[in-house]
Amino acid sequence: MTTSSERVLLTQDDIRRATTRISHEILEQNRASSDLVLVGLQTRGVHLARRFAENIRQIEGFSPVVGTLDPRLWRDDPDVASGQPLLPSDIPNGVDGKPVVIVDDVLYTGRTVRAAMEALLDFGRASRIQLAVLVDRGHRELPIRPEFIGKNIPTARGERVQVRIAEIDGDDAVVLGREQ
Image (cartoon, rainbow, N blue to C red):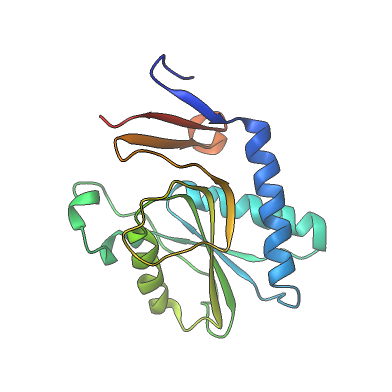
């Protein structure tokens, strides 16, 4: 449900189409990789990674491993997540020698992705790391660029992009609002 100060940027159907397209793009760039690992960043990235894995299973007949990662311990701006409990990180069978796609809902400054790449090293040395995001809103502070993007949505710094995922929020939508 949106408030009068929010604007829906992507609907449930838009998100379904974007996740289906990204799943195809991941397969195209990782064609011979039955050892593909999708690593969802807590929390919404985990559910997006699971959706990509299910789409890939339906398209290709194999299910990539889905891992979860909470990169907050590796952030260079620890105040961002202070006071919130850490969520579990688990990547079954590690990532040594395997292609990895980090999955997140929104790419903004790039600091979360940088932290995720550093955290990923604790699970082994991947053969390749790629990035998939549902929304790229710009305003990068680090040289991070996703290979797979659902939608580029230029925003102002004072705006907030909220991704709603049915598994957590009860519905799928991407909403633009004001920072509080």
